[in-house]
Image (cartoon, rainbow, N blue to C red; front, side):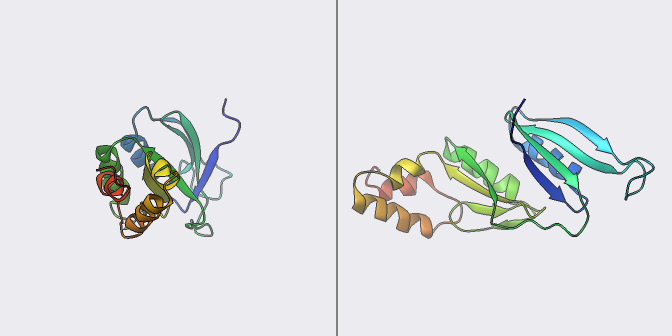
Length: 157
C-alpha cells in the first residue's frame, strides 16, 4: 500500500473529477466510492469520497463543501515522453479550465497541473549555461510546452 497519498478536496465534484482523470491517464481506475449515510452532513447517498489511481498512483478525493479551494501553490506534475502526450494531456485537462504559462494549467475543478516534457530538466540543467538560458527564455514564452522548440533553443534541432 502506498504510504503517502495525495488528498484533494472538492466542493461537490470529487466523483466527476475522478472520472475525468481516470479517463485521461492510462492504467487508471476508480478504486472505491463512499457515500454519505443517514448521519452525514449531505443527503444520504451523496458521494462523500472517491479513491482512484492514475497510472498506479493513488489519490483520495473528498466532497468537502464550499469552504475548500485549490490554489496554484500545489500542482500535479506530469512528466511526458512525447509531444503527442503533452498535446493530449494539455487539451483534455485544460478543457473547461484555464491554460497558463510554462506548461501550467488549471482544470475545470480548480486543480493545477504541470504538463512537462521529461527532457526539459536535461535541457535546463545542461553544462552549457548559454543553451540553458536560451531554453529558459523559450519556455517562458510558451503556454503548452513544445519539445522541438525547446530543443532548438538548446541548439539540438
